[in-house]
Image (cartoon, rainbow, N blue to C red; front, side, top):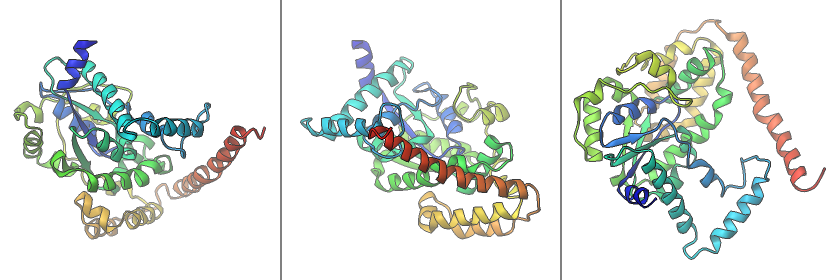
Length: 327
């Protein structure tokens, strides 16, 4: 255990903050080629510890609201309060990162897209970490969710948490993150100017650029991560998916949804990500639609609205009654 603690003191985490389908698996594979960088596919390690403080949006058999009250009361009694709690999370994570790293590694990549929901907390708890904000045209992200996870069928109601609160959380965290600890990167730049972008990342991490990082990517299949991208492009980088999103906007219902999504994102967030809302809207206007999937999409959009609002509200009410002894 002492060896693990000593190793943990020499490991520095790299957090890749992005939405799903934004190229984070590709970036992780690129950086993992370097002998000083270690990683595992998607740890999802930190979410429960930060969500332990949240009273809403967590549902569990053990009555999560009671946990949130208890943990917060415990934290209030610590000498340095929330700072002690953050230090404990950091210490645990660093030990586990060290256990998962090769002996010579100095960095460990924690790439978990749902960290968009706790990005601000991670930045506060890991002041010595490096943070890479990886952006992708959000319409391309949504289209990729439909194609990769829905086999072309409408399914975005399943990913509301990523497309809306997740994107908002990333933009807020980016504005609060210390400039010296973070860099911003666009997926489109990564796949179109791969060598130049990798060189900039290496300079940010203060590690030597290795040519094989752009051409000799590891192929590791896991339960989580971009399995389809790994299998499709194997050990190479491809820019074929940059404008492919427009093919997914195949009918009027989808075009209206995508336009409304742009409006909800807003110009300010587009600028934070490095995009121009007007350019993306112009691309969207030029998309020619047909009646493909129109009826099925309309049914699925209605179903998504029902699933999101009605059952969850009833579930919340039932759970509150159970916790209050109403059964």
